[in-house]
Structure formats: C-alpha cells, structure tokens
Image (cartoon, rainbow, N blue to C red; front, side):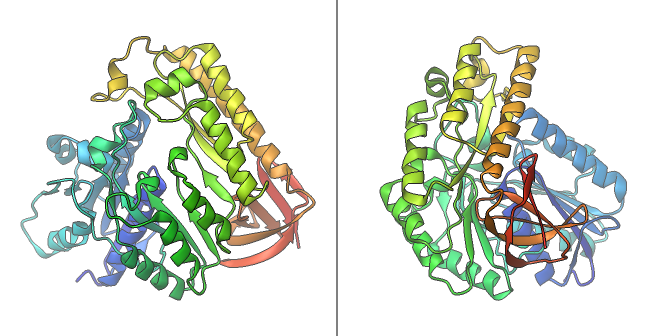
Length: 429
C-alpha cells in the first residue's frame, strides 16, 4: 500500500492527458496515498505531451524541475513524450518509471514497488500500443468537473501529426464501463462531465457502439447537469449525433472543432478530410440545430509547409465567417517521421512568428466578440474556484465568468453579465 505517501501529479497538453492524470490521482487515493499540489512529495507523476517541439521542451523542463525539487522522490513519467523518449535520456534525467501510452494503469504498482525495494531499479513500461488501458476514475481530484476518457489513439493520419505513432490505433472504451464511471463521479457530487479522447469522433467505430447512443444514455443519468466534449473533428459529426445533442437536456452549447487551416490546398496537404466550405457549412448546420448561441472554438495551425500569405489570410477569413470564439493558435512544428516533415517549402521562423502573432490578435478579437454577446443577459455559471478575489467559473458555452462579492465553489448560479474584458465576463452579486 501507499498509505500516507504524498503523490504529486501534473499533466501537460490535451484534455485526454488531464483525464488520465485525474484517473491516476484516483488510483493513488484508492491505495491510501495523499495527492498533493506542490512539494514536498514522495513521488511525482508527469503526464507528458509531444504534439510539438515546444511540448517536448516543456515536458523535459517539468521533469527536470521536479527532480531538482525532490532528489530522493520516485519520479514516474508517462504519456506521449515518454512513449518516444530514449531510455538512456530518461535515466540521465533521473526518471525512475518510464511508462508509455496504454501502460499508465501500471504506474501505481511500479511506484509502490519503488518504495518496497531497497535495491531500486529503473522500470520501463512501454511494450505495445494495443487494447484499452484500464485506468478508472472514482471522483475528480483536481477539478470540479470530471474528465472521462472514452477513446484512445488515432487512425486518421494527418500529415503533420506524430500522435498516431505515439498513441497507437484508435480503440474505444465499452459504453457500460463509461456509464459506471460517470455514475461514480456523479455520486461524489460532480455535476459536469467532459468526454475526452485522442480522436473522440472515432468512438465506437471499432466496437460497433454508437457515440450518439452514448450521449443519450449519459443524458439520462440522474444528477448530470452538464455534458461537454473535449475536441471533436468536424468530419465526425453525423445526423444521429447531432440529433442526440439537440435532444439532450444537459449538453452544453459549446463544441471544439479543430479547423487547422482555412485554405483548401493546405487542408488537402494536411490530409484533413474536409474543405473550408465544409467547415463553415457544418457550423451553420450546428447552429441551426443547437441554437445561435452555440460557441464554436477551434485549433489553427499556421506556417504549414507551403502556406502562402493568401492561404493564411483565407484561414482568418474562415474564422470570421464561422463566428469562431476561442482560438487555440500555434505554429507548425516539424516532427520527424511525419509526411509533412519532408515536404518542400518549409516556412522560415520569422514568417511563422509573424503569422502566429496575427493569429493571436485575431483570436483575442473573436473571443471578446463572442463573450460580448452575453453582456446584459442572465447566464448560468458553474463556479469552480477563485480568480483574483472573484468567484470564477464557466457558462454552458464555456465563456469564463468572474463574480465579485461571493465565494462559491462547485455551485451553479444564474447571474447577470454586466461587462466583458479580454473574453471574460464579469458580474456582481
């Protein structure tokens, strides 16, 4: 057992990593450990990201920082960086447990073994990228909402993406298992569930189960007030899923639909499987079915090989035409082993940086415009904590809200938005 051991768990990257971090925290609590937010700690677990070169660097920096913070602690590293990392490099960085994807559920055993043996050996947990990794969440530890992972891996193969080789092919979690986990989380007092996956729209395609049917069954659960998704590829939304979303009483009117580019030639070379007009038409169809208040956020990659200034401008035009709110913009990162890495006309760093800066400016403008639509209106906010002396939470549309004059936590209230600044709504009691 790990009774009384202080365990620090930190995640970088996507919401699937957050879901895995929460499930790992739950597994350690189940064994009697105490999950802490900062040093001192007896063991640290890092769920790493490798989607870009910057993500690699942040993963290494966090690992080094935690090793310096507690030289004698057990340091376990998992996730995408860990899947691709050289074993010798990991050892040199002071890693004690190196676990690849689909092996995270083995980490608590490895950490417990570390403490039980006087002759502590490096543990490598990285054989195979098949099957479902059996992490289970009992209740959220770090968040007021529950991130439930329902799918792993990717079988699509965008030309810029290294993730399929690090996560393996798509695999779906059984619906019955998902529903049991959701019920445990709701019984713990959680009111919001976020479904996550590496390629969420592929859920059920390998098992014969239906994503739409999962949404319907989750919506029938007692106590579920809010249901969200992580990221959903636009070409995965069919009529059955759209009908399930429209009929759900708890589905929050927010969808994160990665665009990546608004130029058809760039999209073709990315291997995305949709055109710019396909994307705009889908957003219009979604708002027709789910209401005009649907907030659509997105991912955009700039400076993909061969992207011209006109192609980049096309992307900004699509963002405006689709009335996108939150934009997660980033520069293309050349990843060895992907088709895009060997494409001609790689964009120089200075031009890429200029485009990234323009993208950030446009993104801030779009988010502010989306948030301002709610000024003067009553909104429902699920408060999660405190930010700069104000209660902080999110509307169903995933617009941040800060409330002066109250300290509320894990509570939903109807409040009036009186102002907006930098994409954040403000109100007073």
